[in-house]
Length: 203
Image (cartoon, rainbow, N blue to C red; front, top):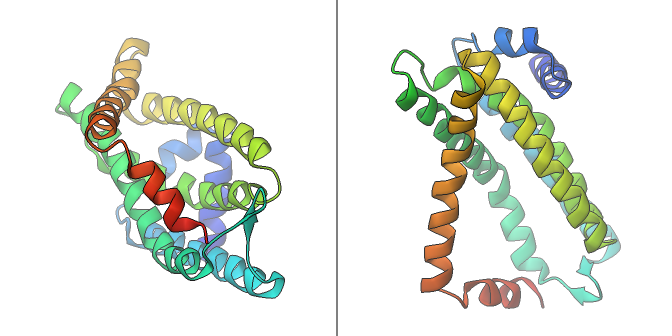
């Protein structure tokens, strides 16, 4: 629990744009503890959402009831999926930095990423819970969160790798460009997938 508390504090300092904390956590030798701490935090959040949902009799979005067995099943998978996605995202940015300069490595950015991810997990869960109250307000917060994520990533890449502005922008936008191309291809090839997902989630 002490490590989780310290990780949360480090994550908050990073999100407060503290460069010294970014440098400090980027030098951690092992990712195992922060990986498990983020996983444990997400399971606590999932447990809260599950118990609260049981108490109120289920969740609904704009009057449409969620398929609760499916929703709770997804909640059980969410913590590990969240960690995996965080690892892939920060690993992808780190890989881009390594391709730009072979002297740089992926691991420092992943370490910084998981220290922010443990705080992000709380923010994402709060936004998700707010979507049951007002989906438009939750969408606004999600857009703000995305912009905040981009700036924090920009600062992290700049601090960890010591890149120039142009190099940081290359590292920052190449993954988004590749991701956008993949989404476009999938959207053209499987246009009905979003509809199937919505039908699957709602009762």
